Image (cartoon, rainbow, N blue to C red; front, side, top):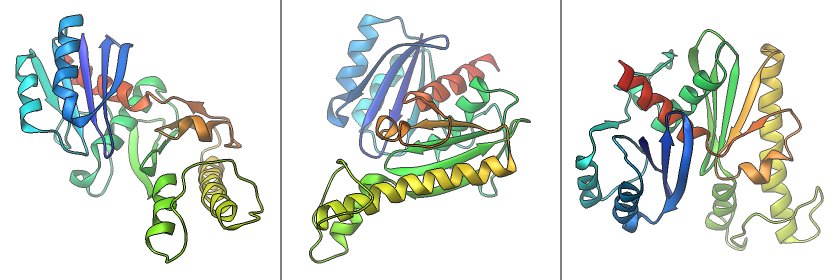
Length: 241
């Protein structure tokens, strides 16, 4: 069995896979991730681990990983199942590498746009030949709310709420600006790609998936576990080599 560790900007996700099937997943407090790993070790026979980190993991928690048979730390140097045409491959985030790997594994021979709506909203495109070109990075929903509060004198800090086109007061105007802005951005990006790649497959993932999925105009595949599945596919790809 495989253990997936995704160290994000704001939280740590853990998942156990039996081959390509997810068996269990959880979100851990960074200070308790060592205990969570130990608990999973007792529950499952785990031999292989992949660690993906855009955040920080304490040194004492890394000690837990030494007990596993195979440990892969994801970086630009790890073997990946696609051709990387990104001009600065060493700066490509490990989360984006994992998302593209998931696209290759689940939608082979297709043009795929992966949209990850988390702390940042990332757009990553891989074509039907398995060639990755790049994409885009923009602020996520919470970052947009936070920036309005941080860089102005009087605007409050808000979180996702019901919204409409026309805001009737300051708060509803902020909700309209942030949430309609994100939706118009996503719909616009999808439309641009669909114009160039008519048979485009679109995958939406990330922490804001459930909120956005029903509001995006285009036909999409919503999968909150897409990154975890991509990490697992990279782990298997490296074990098979």
